[in-house]
Length: 133
Image (cartoon, helix red, strand yellow):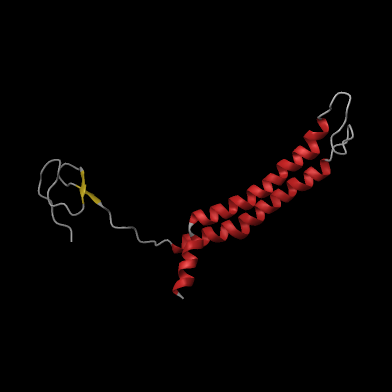
């Protein structure tokens, strides 16, 4: 059971989830850029005298393929966000404790400077401070 708990802590660390989301969305965005280049930009390139681009026909734009790839990218991003990012954020917010941590400094009652909590004398005005239990 301890190994399972350690694995859960490892997975719920922010950098692991961020990396996984980045890889998935980055791969999907790569296909959008590839489709834009292949279907929109490449048909605009014309070599004088020779048309040797692979299966290129002037005026033939593959807008449908590009739009399909763009929609696929947005759907992938939405699925990753709603099925991975949102649940992980919800789990992380539940794991955080609601009790604030003990403050490391306090205010000197005489000069209002910040002094360490355990200090018994102010470093600024040298006044004696009450000890904190």
